Length: 108
Image (tube, rainbow, N blue to C red):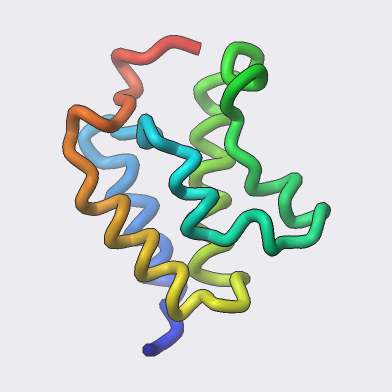
């Protein structure tokens, strides 16, 4: 399988922001796909979902920034990016609208 291009990564981020989308309801699934547990603590810090206790303290913008960092990590820096990015892309582009948060509807 080919390695994703920077353009493909940018296009997926654009897709995830089109129509006022922000993050998926099942954000933790993204961490599974990007193999979060296999990453070094330094990497984990920049791609950890802001869920559970962090959900109420993090701003919408912070959550979206981390989500986009996860997409960039999957496509540009993951050791298995040829597998991980395309699995993440499939997951994100097949999520039903009802399973997404939209900027205008969700609160901190």
